[in-house]
Every structure is written in structure tokens, then in C-alpha cells.
Image 1 (cartoon, rainbow, N blue to C red):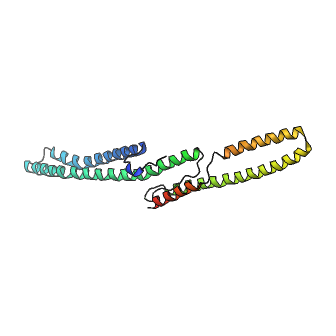
Image 2: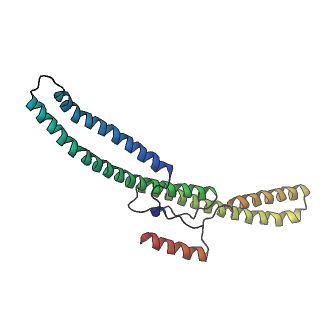
Image 3: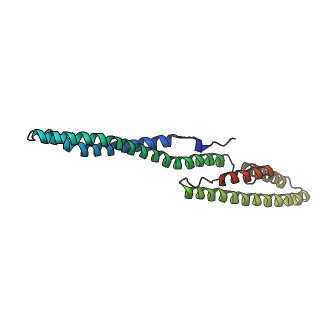
Length: 212
């Protein structure tokens, strides 16, 4: 399955869209409060009928100068904050996208997944914990398979003993044990915990690319 290049996707998932919309809403609230605190007092002063014409003209000129300088600065600040929010959300959305694919692979029985993410991404500790979980699953499955092999060995020894006993009931129970052992082997066989030679070479190449 071709690996999707996350770094080429600007907004890969709805998480980033919601994050950006929420950030934009907060910016609107901040800008609204800032503009109200900055412009309402001059407007009230200009509307004051007790001011002389000269004072009113000076207040109006100051208001227009403030109006000309504030809006471009606010626009630049908002643009910078949106860019920062986009980059910050991408450092979260990227690992989440990776984790979701890992969950799907593990759910399908593939325990050979790599939990590494880019060093500049966030959630590095979560990625390490996820890697430890997958490694522990591999270890436990390996132990279960070893126990399965031990049971299979004892079953075959028991079969040779029962062949001399010639007990139909014992033979029936032995057949049932063998069937259950086959079911266990089939269930364990759905999990991949080791690479073959070609996959090992491909995995080594992928690790080198990720490190680069």
C-alpha cells in the first residue's frame, strides 16, 4: 500500500479545520475587544458637545490616524497567528493520522508497524508509548506461540501413548484437543510478529529514509 506523504497535505483532516476555525473565532473575539477598547473612547469624545471646534478637529485627526495604522497591523497579526495555528495543528494532526493507520494495522493483526513520527511533530511521548504497547503485544504473542508449540509436542506424545491403549473415548478426546489446537494456531496466525527477508530489507530502507 503506498504511503501517503503527509507533509504535502496542507489540511489533511477535519481536526485541523476545526482547530483553525476555533483559533479564528478566538482571534475575532480578541480583535473585537481590542477595537472596542481602542476606538470607542475617541468616538465618545468626538461626540461630546462640550468640545471646541479645534479640539474636535484634533480628536478627529487623531482618530483617523489611529484608524489608518491599527487595521493593517491587526491584519498582519491575525495572518501570522493563523499561520502559526496551521503549523501547530499540523504537528498534532500528522501524528494522529499516523496513529489511526497504526490502530487499523494492529486491528488487522499486523504487529510489524512502525510507530516513529517526525522529530518536529508533537505527541512524541505518545508515539513511544504506542511503540511499547506494540512491542509488548509481539512479545506476548511470541510467548503464546511457544506455549502452543509445547502443547503440540505433548499432544503428539500423548497420541503415541493412546495408540497403544486403544481407547475410543481417549482417541475422541485427543481429536478434540487437536482441533482446538488448530483453532488456536489459526487465531495466532492472524498476527504478524516477524519479517521475512524481503520485508526486512524494505523496513531497513524505510528507517533510513525516515532518519534522513
